Length: 410
Length: 223
Image (cartoon, rainbow over all chains, first blue to last red; front, side, top):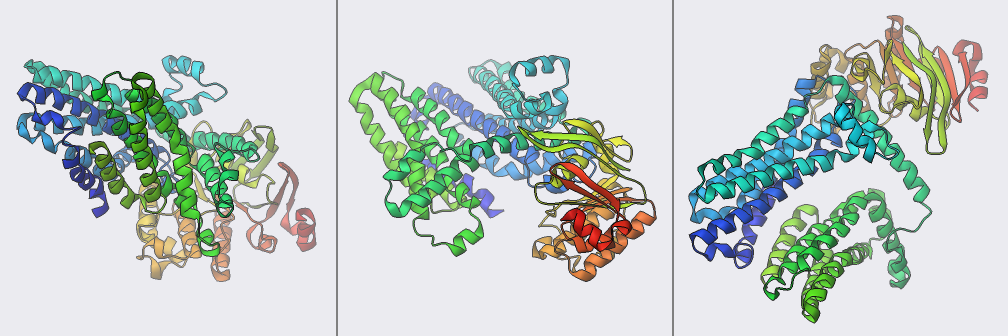
């Protein structure tokens, strides 16, 4: 329970450090503050909806209780209600963290209240659409309008599998659009058009409609394990064929000190095969960093460190995730010397694509000044790697957030 | 009652099952034997709706598992090789959940049957591996389903418990249930099965009554 407060406490702790960057609008006049508040709400809302929409997949499709639940018949109403309740209970720390990010809006209680309603709606939209789309995906795959679309994107996968594979992306898009639409309407409301305030309700309505999708028949819900079984079997076949091949960045191993090579090779392979989504996300982080660095305005150059730094802070979590795969016998029977260092080296190696992507974009637009940002990002990456390779996730997250805030502020 | 008809399952270029047919009738206990990689686990996943056949069909109590998986689950009690239990419930709470979703069952009787009565109110996370398996067995038996599938489910049980479960399976079969049990322990087969089916390289290599085979015959067909 107490650990659930950690993200909110970390956000509250980071607020003073972000007062001159993310929250600098609070020093402007009333109009400027309202414009800045809408921008902040948009970003917090979209982030919240995205995190929850993706988390919904973990909670309802790959949840740890599937092993028990899948052995027994499904009572659709009870099942979906229990899933929604469990997901909401598991996701309340995210809601608290999102609300904590709004504390600097206390200069205007109307904005603060509307903001809290809006961020709560983003949370509900992410969960509702995420759960609804993921659970209903196998049934939606058979509907005439959807099946034609799926045929265009499913490749060699059967429709039901393709539907489950694409469901997280659809949930992300649905929840994101609802939040963005609500944010636009809220901006109109704060400019004086009263009807715009109703936009705050849009994410709530979309979330409820999304959750309604989940109430499909029992056979659809009971079919999900079979569809997942097929997806997993396909990946297992691909992974088995890949076992003999080198993984991403394996070429760096011969350059490592001899005592570190075996452990580094193990970490790189485990990372690529067991945490591929996490490692692969660095490429997305590189694109985002490049977008942040693509500016001619010297005043906007610091946003590269803010944006890419946050990507790197999130990426450092790969350390605790990787250690979670280590079997107990490995820790007990083999000397642990070098293991944390190998994880840190791998994180630094994987994270380079984010730094290079952002710095290259900034260098093209502003020249050598970009390398100062690059040096700061490298320093942050080293710190995230050092912490992520040694700390559990619950301790890493708040520390990394504070470090990121300090890095952006300095 | 438990039927696989011409089941083919391929993973990429690997054929895990190459046209397997298996019938377990009401009142019958069948042991499924096979070495590692023979296709037992794949067949179990198909029979329990955890995977879909590439060709052929699977039926539980006459219900096609691919078409009506939920109705098939109603009629099936399944104990997977790795016992699936909730660590933060007691055994009693876990079984009460199963009774809730299945709509029937006697928690105390299931606890008594598996010898968990004295530990019923402890969290499952405190249990040994054998006790966790007993919870999974109790969950499979509690609603008295007409089809029972046990995947290596007696492994890890102490001999008296394994014997008690074997006797219960015999009693259920006598009352009309169909029982399919996979195992590596060939010595256990005469106690738990009337008929044995041997899988090898994804095909049924032998299908014969245990009484006809005898201990030497069992060792020969499995060897």
